[in-house]
Amino acid sequence: MRNLLTQHYVLPLVTVSLLALTACNKAVDSGNPNAATTIGVEIDDSVITTKVRSALMADELVKSMDVKVGTRKGEVLLSGFADNQMQIDRSAFVAMAVEGVKKVDNKLTLKEGKQTVGNKVDDSVITAGIKTAMLADAQMKSMDVAVVTRKGEVQLSGFVDSDMQANHAQEIAKSVSGVESVINNLKVKK
Image 1 (cartoon, rainbow, N blue to C red):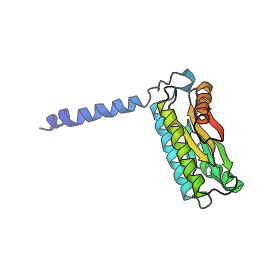
Image 2: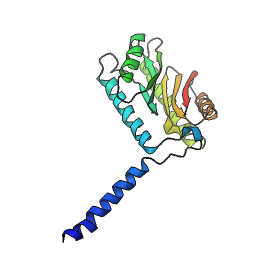
Image 3: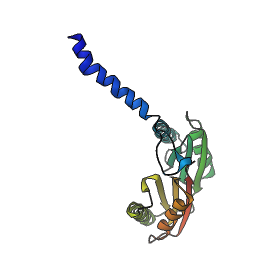
Image 4: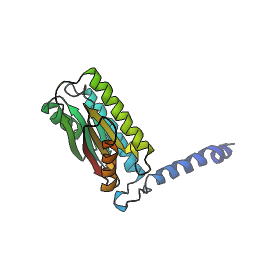
């Protein structure tokens, strides 16, 4: 009976576990030989992103900000808009303190002037329009691009496969109605 349990339950479980561990060392094919990472690194980056977001939300000075966080091989990219320079500096400090973070690229920008409810609604429509246009575009992986809009100023951030893809994302954003300017903080995967 014990041998039967081992054959039917334990051995398949061990086999699946070993296959899962082996997959963590499999390179992700992104079409760019310099951009290859392992599934394990991708998981680590997701964990770092989550920890940075949590740390930012827990910090009294920056918790009310809408900071976009992206991570690639331990490098954290922060983007969005801040009320003052102290929030920008504190965001980078908080992110750098998170275990696993190797470098922080702080692309936070100071907000200019007051934002009205109408501006917020317009900005939401612009952001949605850009994301929709990127989803419809065959060259873009829109989920890899974070979009933040404030008073018609669009900020793109995240990690892309090439400079050509970063430039293409900027052109897509510029083509959306209501966009005043585009800050392209996209980084090419290394």
